[in-house]
Amino acid sequence: MSMTVLINAGPWLPVPPSGYGGIENVIATLVPELRRRGVRVVLATVGTSTLAVDGQIALYEHGQFEHLLAPYNRVSGIAHAHLQRVVTALRRRTDIDLVHDHVEVVGLSTFAVAGVPTLHTTHWDLGKHREFYASLDAGDRLWINGVSADQLRKAPESLRARSLGHVHLATPLADGADRRPLPVKDRHVVVLGRITPCKGQHVAVRVARRLGWPLILAGPVGAYHDQESLDRALADPALLTNPDVRYWRDAIAPHVDGTRVRWIGTVSGTRLQHLLATARAALFPIVWDEPGGTAVTESLALGCPVVGFRRGCLPELVDHGRTGLLATTDDEDDLADQLAASRQIDPSACVKEAAARFSPAVMAERYLQLYNDVLNRVRSP
Image (cartoon, rainbow, N blue to C red; front, side):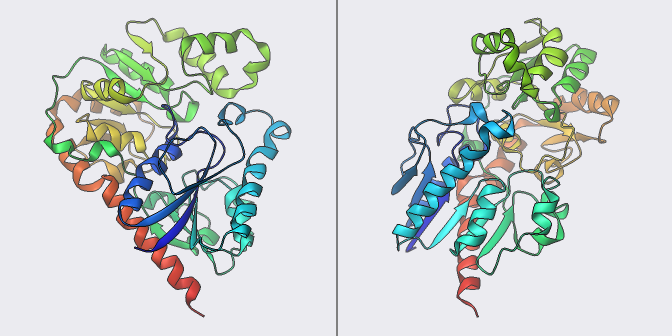
């Protein structure tokens, strides 16, 4: 396919990230499949990105994620400066057929007026920024896609009118997932994701302790990926302005004893794979409508049954009773019952589902359809 696509990953983390980084991991999964299909990819990112591409645009050498939760007046220029560099590069090039944008609000508003064919992927809660979305004038060159049907159902009408549908997120772990041997299960349950209130780690602590099952929390606290960096943050009063750090200190840390509840920070690679593949279940006690669920697809690809509340994207990704179990929303008693019953889920069913639905090739083919859809709409009167 003869096409050149500029993919805007944003200034927050390198691609691929060294552990945590949902959007960046999605892009790192998508780009190789696009290039295998003949698409040339120019990546707008940070200088430390190592993903093989056909061109790179970067203003910042290093990811700016550590600033993401700082007060607005200290960080408001970061994304704007990155987008300014991207638009300047676009003005100088004539070979870009389409922009595939992944930057919340700033990317959408920038490319709405940039005059280039654009597909904007929404990875986040579309209940935020409703005034912005309601007043968006996207012209005839910008279209969006969601990462789940549930996300788009709850989007403002102005966004649904610009939507070309949804694309479920993929994981490289799904490639050949049903051909890998499955290891013996251990006793632990895993919660994978950033330690933040909406992920519900406080709920996981209560549920796991009720059953007496060991709980492992894997993911960063704010910008802090290990105990040493987190201890420094906790010792600095200025860093306690970070809401995730406060959540850790007040709601999670008092329960972490190294045995019944453990926090292991950010994990990736073979360590992450072993952690999930040997877990009894991956627990998703989310207290918001999760739109995408990359960690869900990773868990399934490693034969780890998924247990969570029936909300957000989970009912779309989990086949209740076959690849996981879903509890009534916000009912912790039901969640505990479903977790206790998770031993009946056959891990082989999980990997078969992941291989069929969540492989990078499936996601790439869907995005190629959307790219052509955008270009056809732009060419039409």
